[in-house]
Length: 236
Image (cartoon, rainbow, N blue to C red; front, side):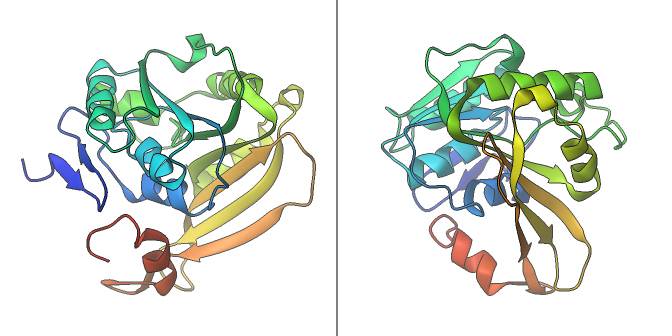
């Protein structure tokens, strides 16, 4: 298969056992927020492991845990970690996030979450598992994530733009999470947003609003996209 391996400048990602292949959402979540270097990171639903790997490149001294429910994807992510320059820092965990526990809190939690409740389900069970969640699961998921987050930490997610407002409205008050930053992502200048990166924290402050455009025009990436991806993509 042509897309079995995705090669970056400093690492490669095998993805033939993963239902969800590397896509734009993952690489944008890993780069657009320009996360400050931290000590402990948790990647929920790591899939191929690409977000964890990109974060390891950004902050090689961080301890990064990456949990994945699907057995095939979990094994493949662990393999990708073992072949990377940051094998000692990356820790793949096979299991259900809702059953996960950690002795220490995390400074940063990231996820490309299973929140596509309005989308049609595919005929592939693994893709459905990766892309769909009910509202009750969302509330429990956020409470769980908040419990693992350090008081000064951030929870960052990427969502379909059409789901973002509903997601924000459903943040349980008891989670202690507040909207810190959101980044609206457009394919082209002037087009409607298609994705939103949402960053939550436990500190109530004025929300920072940002926007990002992927393409300057058809088949031509924006200068901003190139700037964010040049340290990772071989084509830049």
